[in-house]
Length: 618
Image (tube, rainbow, N blue to C red; front, side, top):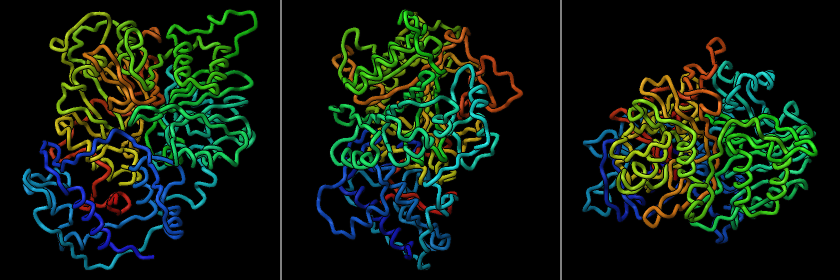
């Protein structure tokens, strides 16, 4: 089968023209976009069409689409991995690409969408002449540098490494990154793969629960050791309608697999939490992480993991309260599970109550869908973070100059300017230190946001398809051009992951010289009101759309005043006592004049990615 570059360009042009129809424009220092009426939140589940189609169309769809529910951006990524479009240098030198022709002549850094405010259609017709006929479709396995049996039996990097050594290297914080294929072995020395987490070396598994957003059940089952694959497995998900039916179909061959649907009654809400509960013969372990349960998320992306100690069972006759840590982690975890109102999770709540979690040194920060008032307002979302910081930290001299850093893989609608949410209620929560009351006018710490640029994605290990896990849409981006002045590039030389695009989400407060941390959180929560919550009714009510979960590291829980920053997180020679392994480089590097944030649903055809391909999401 031959893939014509000509037709792919025309497909990109058609997509651009569809986006252009009936639109107006906005301009910013970091790009020019076309406005549309759609109001996308973050990762939105694919809702398969219920209309009938031909058998051949169904077969084509099965061949090109991932066989599990996921986001539209992931769908586009999968399509481009299995059906790549090669960059043609001759074609680009002879004729401007459709994206180039649609760019503003004055703004080289803009997105490939521009028009005057008066226009309802493109001001000119796009014509692209390609002299070369085309290129053959590249096999997916060869495209990614994988063996054809990768999905059948996944061989993780550094398989010879003893997982116990990795656990020891992660003390005292127990914060890890996932292994990445394509980086130097030394950068995987302290990292974990899902197969490591589920290894019998960590315990004799009796049952487990997996909470997640995007789940490929056949792949997940294969990550368990053979001796554990028939142990009871509960999968907590948020799928509905056709996606739920597909998940049930995938689970049907596995008699040990049960499904638990999280209630999502609020529009645009997702079950975004990523957690494992692992019950062993020897005790219990909790894993809170950032990876979907699909192959791609454990292959060439930067992901974060917090792995609990092995919690022993409380001895008969001992007080159950003895198992509660100073961080209140056990009670908070039980309260989070109770929010699902599920009999299946009631069983796990009882199991947790039977174990001693007193060695936990992190705080749980979760979100659950709903509207909360009174004392309940501070149970979830960014107000939960604010409460913990207020009650468990102290003011720092000169703290107004300590930047707040946010790093994420998706972005929701922030409003028409920074005062609507980002620089008001959200930043006030993140800048809280101690009980001192300060107004936003007096406290104005810098806010640095880390989100991959187009060039970050283009030069990544995966190339443009890495952008499928960065689902910032043009419909959202064009409404908030003010936001992009806060953006910084992804750079992670400290962990060898500059080219492994981040799906991890982290937030922190760092000293001006980036040598010290006041706190650090790793979470599933992206930069969105849906994830963190937003005020309603003049601040008397907190509104949250999604389930999220993360863990907060405070120096006081580790008997420290502050964390120092470990500058090379895998260095064995550097003293690591009290040094937190921040997984990317500090200080963050601000976007240059030509940088622009990655937006997944527009074409990038002017420069090839790592694999010589262009990005055409249509």
